[in-house]
Amino acid sequence: MNERIYMDYAATTFLRDEVMKEMKPYLFDNFGNPSGIHEFSRIAKNAIEHSRENIANALKCQRKEIFFTSGGTESNNWAIKGVAFANRKKGNHIIIAKIEHHSVLYTCKYLEQNGFKVTYLDVNSDGIVNVNDVINAITDKTILVSVAFVNNEIGTIQDVDAISKVCHDRNVIFHTDAIQAIGKIDISLDKYKFVNLLSISGHKIYAPKGIGVLYIKEGTNIENYIHGGSQEKGRRSGTENVYGIVGISKAIELACREREEENEKLRELRDYMIDRILKEIPNSRINGSLEYRTNNNINVCFDGIKDEGILLALDLKGICASSGSSCNSGSVNSSHVLQAIGLSPLEAQGSVRFTLGKNSKISDIDYVLEELKIIVKRYRG
Image (cartoon, rainbow, N blue to C red; front, side, top):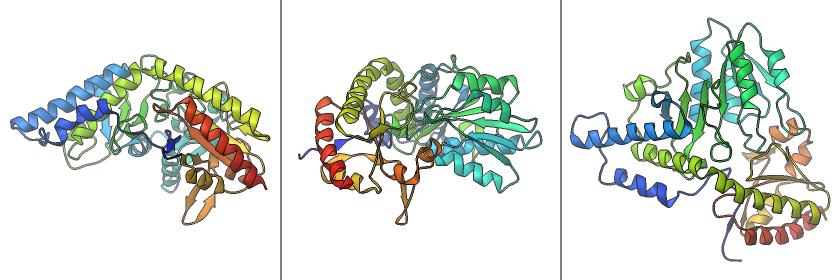
C-alpha cells in the first residue's frame, strides 16, 4: 500500500483547487496593502469587502457582522474574552460545557484567574448538553453561555436553537464554536437568530491555515480584540491576510452550497465503516451519539487496548487517524471529552477518531478495516 489514506479531516483539510485559484492573484499580482490609497491597495481592499459580502450571503447575515481573524482559536478567544470584559459590570458568570475545545476551556480558566466564575456543564453519555441544565445554571450574574455546535472529538451535535433561545429569553449572550459544524449541518444565521457569536476556521473546510471568521451579531456588547489600527472597523487591528480572506470566502461558499450532496456521500461511508467495525471487531463501540452526529465522524473505543500504540501501528500501514488523547511532552493525558461521557482514562486511551472528507472512498475503508482488525487483535494480545 503506497498511497496514504487520510482519515483525519477533523484535524485539518487540504487546500481545494477552487480555493487556491481564487487566492493565487493575491499571492503574486495583487499584493497591495489594503490600507493604502493607490490602485494596488484598492484592489486588495475590494477583495476583502467582496469576501465579506460573499460570506454574509452564505451564512445569511449582514456583511457588517463578519470579522476576519487568524483562525478558530482566535475567534473563540475574542468571543469569550471580549464579552467577559465588556460586560463585567453586569456580571462575572460564564457557562460552558465540559467537552468544549481547549481554546474555550483554557480561555475560561484564564478568566477564572481574573475574577470570573465559570460553570462547567455535564453532558450525557452521548455528549449532549441538557437544555434544562443551562436554564438551571443561569443566574442574575450570567453574561455568557458558550456551547460548541459540534464537538471536535465525537461529532455530537448540540441543540443550539434551544440553548440560544434560552439565553435570549434571559438576556444572556450566546456564543457557539461552529468550526466542526460548517459544511456538515445547516448553520444559517437566519435560522439560528438568537446566536450572538459564531466561530469558523478556514483549514477545516479546505481553505488555508491561519484564517478564521467571527460572526458578531449587530448590537452584541463585545470589546475590541487587537489594538493598533483601523482594520476590521478598529476591532481587530493588523494588516489583513488578503489571500487567506479570499480563500475562506470561497471555501465557505462551497461548503454551504455543496453541503447536502457532500453529506449524503459521507453518511453512506460513515455508516458503512461503523457497521463493519461493530460487526467485525469484537468489543468495539462507538463513542458519542449515533443519532445526533456529523456524517464524517467515527470515534470508536476498542476495549482491552490501553495505549496509543494503535495509532502508530495504523500510521505504519499508511493510515492517518487521531486519538481521543493528547500527548504533551511525552506524557499522555486522556481526553477530557471521552471522560466526560463516561469512559475511563484507559478506555479513552484505547479510542481512535476517524474523520472522513472529500477524498474518502469505500476502498479506503475496506483497506483500513482489514488492517485495523489485525492491529486491534495484536494489541489485545
